[in-house]
Image: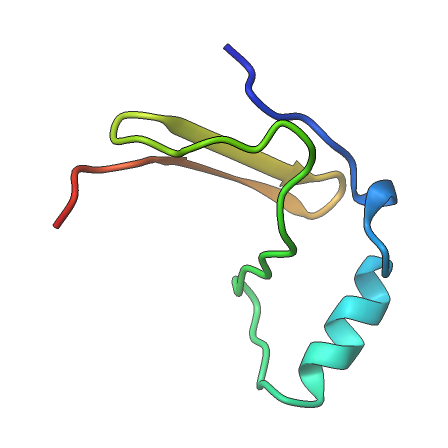
Length: 69
């Protein structure tokens, strides 16, 4: 079941602004992930949960949360 769904249009700063600002402090490389927070409906992430995300024209990411280490 989908728990959260949102769009980058809801971010306070657009993607270019976020990358430009972070680039002042970090050496960003292809494949780096930038976490910007969560949309409405946030909840706990539990072992076994599957998380997917994508940016149109850029790519996607899929992961399954593993057990606590």
